Image (tube, rainbow, N blue to C red):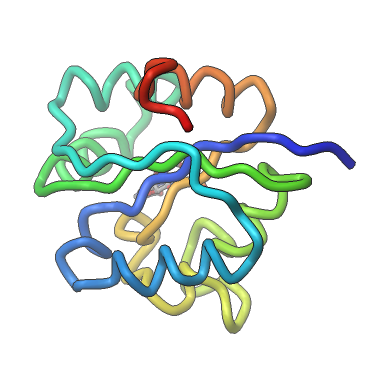
Length: 139
Ligand code: IDP
């Protein structure tokens, strides 16, 4: 396994609920190095570009309303096998189906308001990191 980078978001519901600290602690305890970190609020246009593969799907309007309703935390995370490992730490998309001890189980409220995002492949990770961070933002 090689050292790789992935892209993560602490979504609006987790920021609203005061879960930034606990989620970042879980990230650090799992051995990830934080290479990029920014608090921002997504606009509809930025959200559409980020979720381009989902624009046009039935759930997209709900997803955009949620992701733009309040600030998010953007992260670039690095460790061995980072992409797959971060998805394990997050748990299943639907918090009701996520395993005990995962972040989505703990902090997710519904399929939409599921607390965190993680890239699903090396190609997505590269695209998503570059979408939100320029080279000067990455340590
Ligand atoms: P992922 O975030 O686990 O990779 P995707 O299928 O890529 O899951 O969906 C992106 C995001 O869109 C999910 O994390 C969730 O917030 C939202 N989403 C997906 N399916 C639904 C749905 O059926 N209803 C509401 N929101 C959904």
